[in-house]
Length: 165
Ligand SMILES: [Zn+2]
Image 1 (cartoon, rainbow, N blue to C red):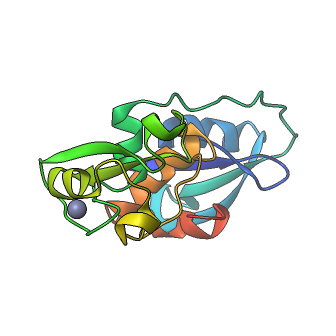
Image 2: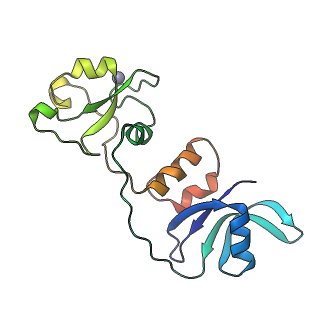
């Protein structure tokens, strides 16, 4: 029994819920089934994997905290310079702090110890070390959660509802 992606009436992803809660929303008529995986809760009632609310819900935008854990997750625990994945990961300021680079999603990337030391106090251009991805702020914690599910191979059917992953 899996998790269910809940879409707003506008088809924007809203949150992730349990199949139980999703089934209740369907039975009460508060949501419609958008995708299911063919498994039945009971005869004639396939378990949903994506549902959509019938009424639009307003949600305040929540900003993702800039933490080491969140940065590592955004970068897939991969050095953004050489592609190394493993335990020896650090955070690198793309524009070094000493040169005015700030603490922001756009200026901090995951880097292995080797690349971090090699780059030193230089910009990627000066060090001839190009970033594999342009660092940016993640959309929301929901996108984070959804990307975790997708990366672990679960719920591929969610992909088409989440743009930019
Ligand atoms: Zn590296």
